[in-house]
Image (tube, rainbow, N blue to C red; front, side, top):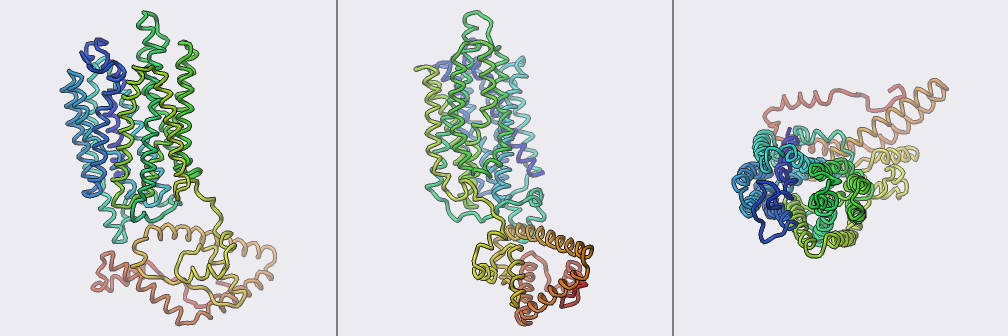
Length: 604
């Protein structure tokens, strides 16, 4: 329910923010319809069209920096509540000031100041999901909700066309009020989950972490203690260049290029356009829907080439698709060129957003826990400044120097963005992940003594490697290797990692035991006498190695494990010192008698 509340809140915010987007070009053309602004002075049509969303995005950019930082201090949920509730008021204000261009843009800016929920949502995911692979998948889902909302906002505007240019704002008011209620009632504050986790129960009790723990095969690593400033600014500058370059493709290739070439030039001349006005609106809003599959596939791509690799690929694809659309949009204004334009846009556009989806995971990699909201805020600020200023500046360039020059400028900036982001591929955790090698095979390339030393220090050694080492030692008449259990104080900061490792251990032990049972069954079928002799020999070797450990060493390990358990019980809030009988019964229930004999036998 908490994840649903988060996703819906971001979806509703995106819908409301773009719910008038298809109408901007009409609103900014005085006299186009009765509700169009009487004047957009001092701007021409293109620059006025892009100034409307720029006013909102400038507010969002300022908001994102504040909301991210504020959520690090007072919590994610309160800030999201402020954003949702504030947007109800801001959207209503836009309706009230719709009569003039500057009045509406002012209300748009104020509404943007309370619309910085996305960086808070991404920081929320960073808080509740410890491993990077799951986090990347969740980033993709939440970003997909945001992109879907951008598309749905435009669809609402088209469906409500007969009700007027500004009527969809009331749908936005309703969606944001519902989002405020849902977030208030359902969203769980991550700090509450972290308190539970510190008591040793968070991952079991949290619905959020339960949802993904069962499938968590990804890397779990501790966040850094401080931000690598050089890497952070490389990511930010690359993201800014990416957003500027992307505007050469979208929206400039749509408006004015496609809008003028396939509709407006015909309409001005009194001819039948190749593309109707309603067709143009549907084409412009539906393109956002094709981004959703890309947001779901992107984590898989990142697992192959890394987030930085995906970023560079996205930059290059943006440049390629921009040139293709410019060629098709500058050709003969007929149905064949229009079909080619739409095909390239719908097929190529999803590839271009890969770079924008990469900045969140890359920044999360370098963010300490208490800076997650701030770095995601920086990310959103960069995206919104680029998205706000670039269309307006390129729109003015298109008015003064021509549309083609403005689009070629976007192409050049995309290439620069790829070059800026290229060095990130060599930053640990951002480039192509190392090739996975089977743990057992990898260990066999090490010197045994190195592995033994790691194991004796209590460092994790996979079960397959541990068994191979102990099997070798039993054949050589050496004692078993016993890892040092360590202390609860040492392990309390990595309980999530222990859970992940325990899952792998359970998988291995289950498969290993099943394989042994299968070999025994096949041995009985083929040659039972030979099987019996082999079992006798193996059991005797194992018993000898176990006995060589000595009671003192075994007692020491059990004592340390007992202390570990006692420390965990105490840290988890159980009053074991006053409820000893109940605690003993809980232990007996959790650990019933399994095997009373101290030595192995072939029959057991």
